[in-house]
Length: 232
Image (cartoon, helix red, strand yellow):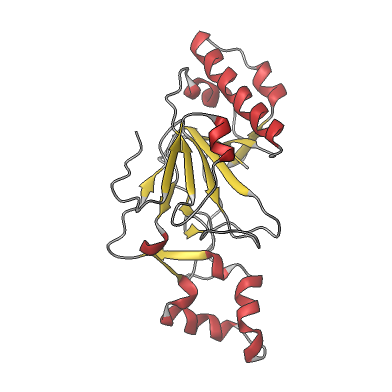
């Protein structure tokens, strides 16, 4: 079960895919969870795929080609079904096996990789869907428990040193390089782990959004344990 003790009305749980995609975000609620307890051995699928890079994408043909035990086959059917229902909805899901993401050390005072709390942005109305089937799972954070990093004085001062244009273009500079997407958890913050097997829909920053975008981050992976993640 998802721990909602610090959710601040941010999360709404549903019991079907139809409710997941038809429920409207409103107020503080910017994360919807299709709460599920999945069957099958997803770790077997992860072990069957050799990673030549830090992230490998599995397509349906590759999934069908894996020689799996009965429990592995159950897991595969769930993966295929999740991919199919999201594609039928109009989304473009990808299934990744992840050793780790690339770290961003370009600006030590403001990392802009996915391990930092951040929001997603789109020029058109859309949402982020994700589900972790194996390995460490992502965290989200109530918006009141995060501070936009560009508003932190010492970080803002460092960014101004990077910028060499006219003062009126500074905010556009922050947006162009995605600095404005990243947040710092407050000292008293309580991140909420998204758990294993649940399919989530997260609000993002787009022109027609009626709610604040959901703050989320990728987890730090455990050594030797790869993640199996669906995202779109």
